Structures are given as C-alpha cells and as structure tokens.
Length: 178
Image (cartoon, rainbow, N blue to C red; front, side, top):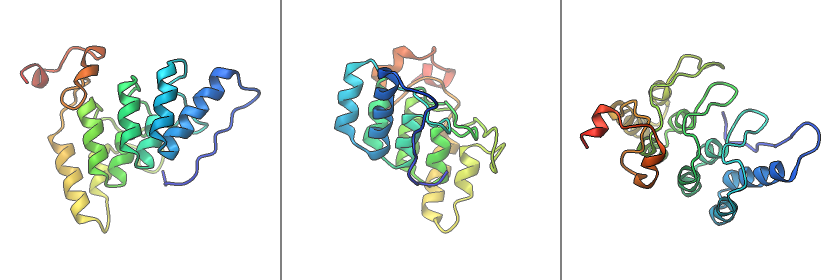
C-alpha cells in the first residue's frame, strides 16, 4: 500500500470497454480530473474497474491524493467500500497515510469506517486502527482519529454528496434525524 506506480495488466486481449476502463483508472491514478470527467460523461466505462491487485479508480485516486478525482468518481457512483486484494478500502488507504481531507470526503459520501482488512499485514484493522499507527505525524494522527471516531457506520451519503443520497440505502437512525 505504498504510493508507487501501478502497472495495469490484463490476461489475454482487452475489448474496447476494458481499454476505456483502464484509461479511466489511469486518469484517476494520475489526478487528471478533466480527462476523468470526460470519460465519466460517456457513461460506458466501469467506474469500479479493478487493477490486477483489486484496486479501483476510487482507491487509486485516494492512494495518490487526488481529492477532485475522488469526488468525480463518487458522484459517478463508485462503490465506496470495495476492497483490494488485501481487504483494504479507500478509507483505510486514506487513514494509513494520514490524509484527513480524503477521510472526510469518503466519510461524507458514506464510507464504512468500521470495516476491517481481511488480509495482509494489517488483517483485522479498521481505518481508525491504521490512523492510530501513524508514526511521526502526531497532528495528522490526531485529526484522522478524531474524524474516524466521530463517524458512524452509515451506508448513506449524508453530508457532502446530497445529490447521490437517493442512490443509497435508507438512512441510518443518526442520519434520518439530520
């Protein structure tokens, strides 16, 4: 889960849709928000396309600190709680790197803060656990942990993305009153 180049490789030949989805993934990875939006406007690419390691465009935009790409993918319907091959979500990646701004975006869109990694060296950890392990970043650690402690397990877009609220499940009790 380091911020390094991700090579996309697919077994066999790719059809046009898969090539387009790779282009969408690449735009999210490189932070090319305008290119990403043009591709999303075509509405024919898989917004949840997975790389060979199970990472989605939302996950890679988060991993590489591209908040505008994250917002565009969320508005296009990207699933917030999909996991990579180690069972990490985009929220876990944001927490592991101490990115409070990205954590806020994901929580406001309805990401699940209680989901736990299902594999890898951090198996059983949730986003708050990962944020607590930020060494040498006490300010970032404090901000991230506070955000994650204040979050509820809500599968609804509650605050930051009202335009996608209707695409989610009915609100949880704490959101229904808001």
